[in-house]
Image (cartoon, rainbow, N blue to C red; front, side):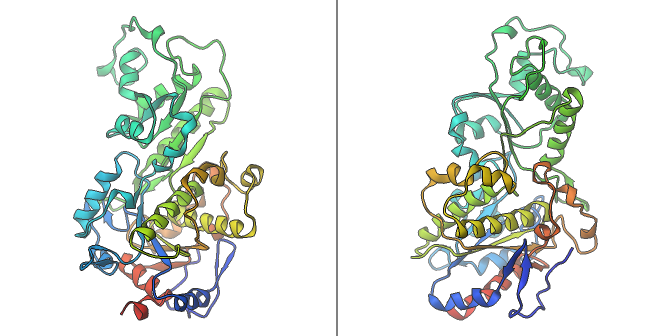
Length: 423
């Protein structure tokens, strides 16, 4: 994997995701205005913290972005995490505690945040999986008829049979009256994988009515909305841990093994999906307005530790921005041909208004999480989500690489000539 060193001259052109990156163009743009025309998207796990431990240099990095006198950010900053088992306010409170500066929920983008825009599913009866307050999260996103995995296993006690101590052989008398499930929402990895995998397959095979064995397999299956595609993530352990992407991999392979059909996602949100980056840009542009910037953010810098999600996703979005400059409307057919799942970003996010304006998105890889210089070469391109394969090597090459988040912030300031204009 080619990683761009900071020792490279800023006059050089860098290759990123099939696009030419010209630092001189970035530098020259800084002299057009005394206010910043750039914003930063931060990953959290592996960039700011590992598990519950704040990484060195993270508080110092954010002290350069935050004005203690005005108690607001000097640079538009948002936090984009693939976590899907908590609410934004909870994550904002944790960030405030870790970084010693106030972070608002409006600055946080969770893996599930874009689901607010999936209005066509909000009135359907959905089964939600994950851990934490998943029912509250679903209702907060707009879903009105919600069933959790625990509620489903209590309604159909004979289905959960792997753990002998939890087996309840007696069927519920009201099983046949249970309202048909119309869609599945996967927020994050559950605690008991065997229970969720079994009951999800049951629901898909029975077309949402697991009270009786299906006479035939209905295909295409029920709509599935999945968040967080991270195969691995970095906690306190010395090696990466399995993420929701690993659970999805199990579900995909079990469904294909049982039915002979491919499991198809109606939508995949969270990094590296361009939908999530488009939504995150919308949030970033709103932050720019809130701190008083008169012009939209033009350059986005995405700082992450995971090549297969953070870097891949930022590079995909940079490619999207290039296409958007070439044409005002990207048709659904074009979108599918270039790797979108099944939805047009522009059609989906048109309801968010026109708070857009970014022309480029640059990826910065830090070495404090999933990626390390010694172990990074062992990361296979196949670690990327199935629906985004095949992956070109160039899409997993960061624009820049730094040791930590403080180095990344210093690099951005240098590229944008911000120190000179900030005095």
